[in-house]
Length: 216
Image (cartoon, rainbow, N blue to C red; front, side, top):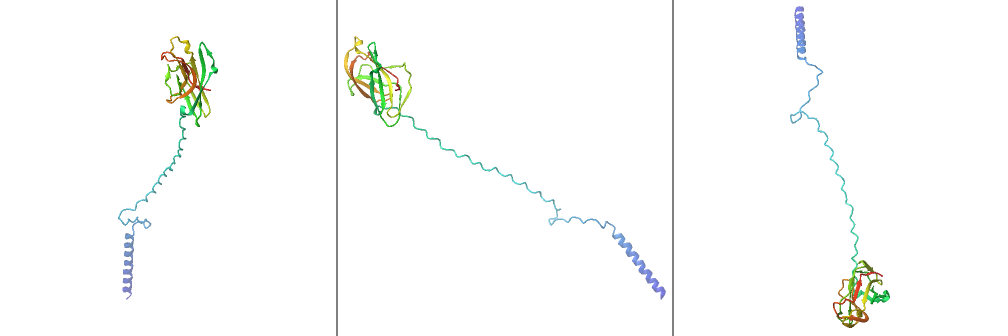
């Protein structure tokens, strides 16, 4: 009986030793090894998170162009003086010499707006306001330069008018003139200045000369 117990104890001891050896063989590997990273559901390794996308470059603020103001209104050019807005007169205070008479031909603005005189008047002797010119028209005396003469309402521009006595010309076919016909510069209408005087009907004899208008 006792020998049977010893035999069973030996058998148990032997089985325990065998089990210990088996456990030692199966436990080779580092028990502290880290578990491997599990794969993603798609089967590929988990990739590093994508870097944050760069912030979009802020666009430059819209530049509003400064409002362009409308150009200042340029006043219309001053109109030339016309016969309809002028009154003419002569001033004989210029005196005379060697059979000539120098006088001032004055044109006064009778309108309500300024006007411009520039250059020479057309002047001739005539029988009356409706008559034809007698003899030659006035020649231009260019010794005085042209200038722009701005006439406000009521202001006057003046030019030197010279008349040579008809009796100075032996071949003059004298006739009586009723006065002077005056055309303002660049105008086709005229003014009549009554001033009875002798004229030469000869077209080749020039009794008159006129200077450029100047401020009075």
